[in-house]
Length: 399
Ligand code: PLP
Image 1 (tube, rainbow, N blue to C red):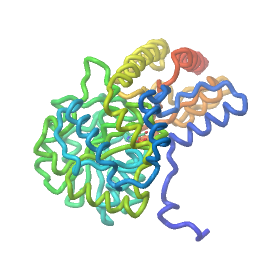
Image 2 (image 1 turned 90 degrees about the vertical axis):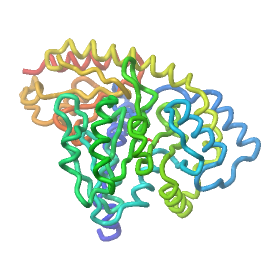
Image 3 (image 1 turned 45 degrees about the vertical axis):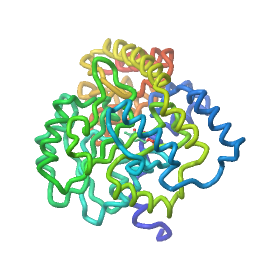
Image 4 (image 1 turned 30 degrees about the horizontal axis):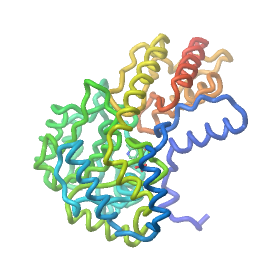
């Protein structure tokens, strides 16, 4: 039909949200599905944040705010950046949006002209290429180091052109959980330094979930000289179990922040006034995220221990961050199911696990990397034990 725009016809729906919705549908139909497709912590929002929101409602803080976000929230974000990241930003270098995704969308909208290229290292969070395309840009997918699945400075350099507008970095990574080391960031910075026209989007939304001895480091910690052309993206969703509140932020150059603010003033006006009050309190306290991190670490180790008992999955790399396992399926491809069906793609394997193991996962193809699948371990330890054992049992029926 010609009702819909080219723009929307060309857009993919978020694959991970789709899989999560399918799993939810099967569960509501009575299927006993273990849902490993979810991309959010299964913890409650910290009480202090929720209570602040209730207070905001009763105190009448229920009106439009500054399109850049309330000043006291931006002050809390600057304090957070100083305390957690040892980075100095002023309140006019910070913009609050309705989630990190909203910030990324408005950032690309504010900067991308038709034909501009956005370098997206594979495997990537599903939304980067689609948001870039939606804003008229051309996503350039760059293949990672085959073992670490991280972007290498060599591949980055090969893919930078005069049309490159943005390079996206995501550490800790969704979907791999990879955390970039200081040395790796240093070599990426060396390349970026040589190409002054390139902007850098550093998505640090999983910052709070890094498992010792790994440490979260921002590109700007190792390359302060790149600060003016880097936008750090972070938010309350993951680290504070606040996905539904929709608060994210960007920290970067004033000119970029002002441009995003101008756009927001014409699109969403401002983030929810109530959520802003809650987030202000959340950013002030690291304790809830430490509790979640410690719990995720145990769940990660449990999942890896059970899955490793399958000969198909013997060499699982333990992710240093986030709450995802990204499993290599090479040894499974080509196997036959009990009824003689050959598993050809990672989608086939995801469907097989949904049918035979009652486990919902997301295929690597959604993240631009096959044959892989992503398992989220942001669910209860009982669910992890049950789901991982079901996967191992289902795989053992393959020939
Ligand atoms: N960046 C990455 C890598 C993510 O995985 C997500 C959510 O899944 C986001 C950004 C966006 O989160 P939000 O819009 O809830 O802040």
